[in-house]
Length: 204
Length: 420
Image 1 (cartoon, rainbow over the protein chains, first blue to last red):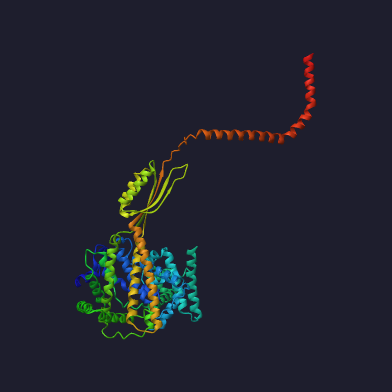
Image 2: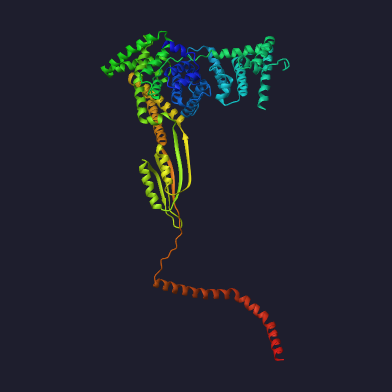
C-alpha cells in the first residue's frame, strides 16, 4: 500500500480523476490530499468564518464525486475544481446577501494570531475592484496561470494580464501610503502611466 | 522615460516574473532587466507585493473530517467497496500527512472502533460523554462559531488531541452513514445518471372523440401515470376538445407517446428535456451540510450549559436551520418528482363536421309562425309606406307643383297634334 501511495503521488491530477471515474478510491483520496488544503485556503480567504470554509471545501469534493461521470479531461482538473469552488462561493455569497440584506458582513474574528502586516494586506485587498481582486487572489494564492484564470473568469488572457497588473499596482499603492521621496514617486508614477496608457490602449 | 528606453512593457515584465512569457520574449526581458535600473525597481516592487500577499496564510484546516465524503464515495461506487473501509482509508491518507506512522494511526483507529462499539452497547449516557468530548474538541479546533465562542471556554485540547479527534469522527460517522443509506433507498434510481426533467406536448385530432378519451384514460392506467389537470370543452359550432396535463413515469413516456399518437391524426408534437443534475447535486450538498449543522447544534444544546440567552440563541439558530432543511427537502422532492415523472401536455380535438338541423317543427307552430309573420309584414308594409310618405311627401308635392304647368303644356300640345 505504501508503495502504491508513493507511486500515486507522481501521477497527474487528470489521470487520477480518470482513474477515479474508473472506480479507484485511492485516486480520489490522493486528489483529496492534494486539494483539500488549497481549496480550504480558497474559501477561507474569501469568506469570513472558517466553519463555512471547511463545509464548502467538503461540498466541492462532494460535487466532484457526484459529478465524476460527467468530468471530461478537456480542462485541467485544477480549473475544474476551482470552477466548482467559484460556483459554490457565489452561491454562498448570494445566500449571505439574502440573509443579511444590509450587506454588512461580520468582521472576521480570527485575527488574534495574525500579524499587523497581514491585516494591512487584507485591508488593501478589500479596497481593490472585485474583478481585479479575484484575479490577483487566483494568481497569488491559488497559483493559477493566466490562461487558467482567463478560463475561470471568462475573460481574454490579455485582459487578465492587464487587470492583474493594475491590481498589483493598486495594491502596492494601498500598501505604502506613506509619503514618497520625490524621485521614487516620479519613477513609480511614470511606470504607472505606462501601465495606464497600455490599459487604455487595450480598452480602446 | 519613454518606450524607446524600455523595449519591455511593464505588463510583460510582470508576466516574465510570473513565468508567463514565451521563451524568446523571456530572453529579451531578462536581457533588458539586466541593464535597466528602473525595470529592476518595478520588478522588486512586484515581488514585494507578492511577498506581502503571501504573508496571509490560511491556517491549514484542522478538522480533517471526511465522513460525508467517505459516505458519498461509498454511495457513488456501491459495487467496489462497502461503507466502512473507505472512510478508514481516507483518514489514514489524511492522517498520513500529519503523523509519519500510518500504521500507528490505523491501530489507534481499530482500538477506538472497538471502544466505540462497546460504548454503544453500554448505553446512551456513555455516548453523550463521547459526543461532549467531540464537540469540545471541535470548538477548540477553531473559533468557528460565534455561539460556541459565547459559551464558557472549552477545556484545553492539549490532553491527547489525537484521541479526541478520533472520537469526534467516530461520533459523527454514525449519522452520516445512516443518511447515506437513506438517500440510496429513497432515490437510488435517479442518483447515478443525469437527471432530466422531460416534457412533451402532443396535439391529436380524432374522429371518435369519446372513444379516444376512454382510450386515453386506459393508456394512462397502463403506464401507471396520472392526470395532473384535465379540461374538456364542448362549444357549439366547433368540435369538442380535451386538454390534459398527464404525468407518466419518465421511462414510460415514449411508450405513452406512441400510444397516444395512435388515437388519431397528430397535429403537432414536441419534446424537451432540462438537465437539472447540477442543481440537484448542489441541493443535496447544501442539504447534507445543513443536516451536519443541525447535528452540531443539537449536540451543542444537549451537552453545553450556558447563559439562558445563549441557549435561546442556539435554539433560534436550530429552528432556522431546521426550517432550511425542510425547505430544501421539499425542493429536492419536487425536483425528484419532476425527474421521475415526465409531463405530457396532450390536446385531443374532435374532427368537426357541420351538421344540418333537420327537425321539422309542428304544423300549429308553423301556422302561428306564418300568422305572426303575415301580421308582422302587414304592419311593416303600412309602417314603411307611412314612413316613406312622411319622409318624401313634402318634396314630392314641391316637385309636383313645379312640374305641373310644363307637364300640362306638353300634354295639351300632344293632344293637339293628335287631334290635327
